[in-house]
Image 1 (cartoon, rainbow, N blue to C red):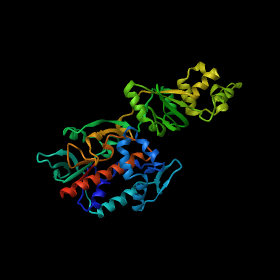
Image 2: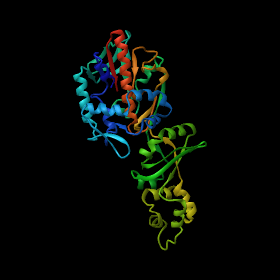
Image 3: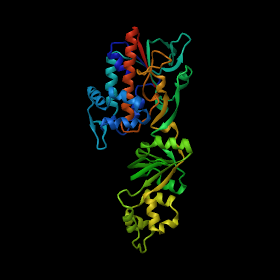
Image 4: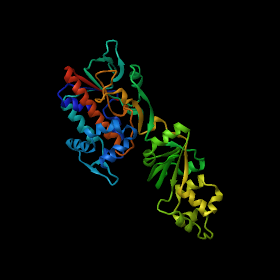
Length: 402
């Protein structure tokens, strides 16, 4: 995105990527359908960035969800709004958009250098790259760093850039998993029966002493090690921070959101005859499979004979999360270059002429198009900042990716 802005401004752009091809993490983001952005009202959209809203909102006001859809249309990629408000290309695939974009960039004069890994600076302050041809020095009038966070390292976002910048005095917050799964101490019996099972139509509530912090209906997946999926990702930052602070996070599940407490008690109080408790749960209130399994996993056996106690568990089942899954498994990462280390053009205050964009900045957001939209917006902002810089000095830029 930064390269596009710079090339359209009439300057010569070289884009260096550590990987053998461009946009590998972008392609991963589109597995199962590229969720490009979200169609909800802007004032609601910007709340998804939490504590980083003050830093991200100005970028989105310059290039927001509607602008991103128009940009995609300019590449010949039409989009549509799904039932959840998420925005997808009509073909749902990432590759056609990426291929059209790379073709346009090359036509505008952008030169790509693959298998070039940035390793810092040489003694003469030139950029130093490892390449198949050996070490390559590069002199640039402006440099945009778009080096990613720490999730999906196989796509190139390894966080190896951190010591290069901290060695120059740049403040970088430690990288943490975001939009991630969590560990739960399942019994072997539960794990062997239900790993991989989707838990649908539940309400997840996470509270603190000050009240409810998160409450939403949706679904997630039971895994070998714990839980993951859209409903978990939506509150993963809160859960991760709670585990960091206290060593444990407890969320509560309503396994029967369409039922009142009273109706459940009435149905479960009916005589079950010769039916087993499990059959009675399924016949009376429709609880079976993984939902019933969760009850057997965590509810004392004696409570199944008491409709009141059993219903309290069905409507408010505690689930203890013991740890976030490792960073390399996460969809995205939190942490990165501190915004205080950047000026309003996303230029590093300690390194004039160096700009930062994308996931390497210290922000996070839930899935739903919010991650990609802010990455596009920050890339454009860094490109505009670099363009102003090189025009003032009559210099040429480079873009470092992955």
